[in-house]
Image (cartoon, rainbow, N blue to C red; front, side):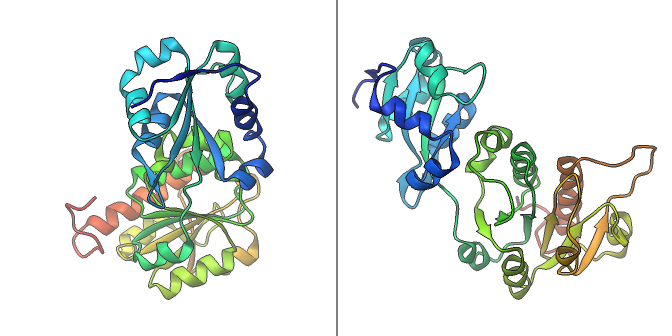
Length: 284
C-alpha cells in the first residue's frame, strides 16, 4: 500500500478534478465528484463494471487522521490519494465548507436493460425532474423504501450533478440507476417486464388511500415522478396505468416532490410486503 502524495493547486490532477464541476467534462471523462466521509466511504466500497468506483481522493492531513479507515481503504482499493491544504480542497470541492475528503469516482449508472433483466418489483422513474436536490433526495427515498432501481429519463437532471450526489447521501452507491432513458421507452420496458405503471400527480384521478384499500398495490410497481413546479405533462400521464394523488387531509396546499415520492414508495413497499404481496414480509 503506497502513501498519500502531497499535491499543489498547480497540479494537473487538481485542474482535472476542478473541471468535473461542468457537465460536459463529467460526460467526457465519465467521472464525478463525491464529497464528505459518508459519500467517500460508500464510493470506496462500491465497484462499477468490476472496477473500484473511487479512483482518486483529495484529503487534508487533519481529515486523513480523523478518517484513517477511509483513507486506508482507498489506498487498498488502488485509488490515488493526495494530501491537500484547505486552498486545494476549496478548489476541487463543490461545497462552500468542504469536509476534508473529496473523491473522484467513475460513473456507475446501469444499462436500462440490466435493470429489466433483474425483474424489479419497485422502481422510481424521474421524468422531467430538473432540480438536482430533488433528484438526489428521491433517489435516497427510493433506497430507503427498498426500491430495486431508479430511472432518470432523458428530460431529467444530470445524475452526477454535485447537488444530486450530495442530496442522495450515499444512496447513489446502493441501487442501480439508469440515465437518459426516454420516458416512453422506460414505461414500455417496465410494462413488458410485468410492472404496473403509476404516475404520481396532485391532480390524479385515483387516490393513494383508495389504491391501498383496494389491494391493487401488492404487485411490481413503477412510480413516475415529475417536475415539482408543473407536474407531469399530459402525454406522460397518459402512459401510466393510473394517475394517483397523495390525499391531503389537512390544510396544506400540496406536498413537495421528495415528500410525495417517499409517501408513494413506502406505500408500495408496505403493500408488497403484506400477505399476498410480491415480496416476502421478511425480505429487504
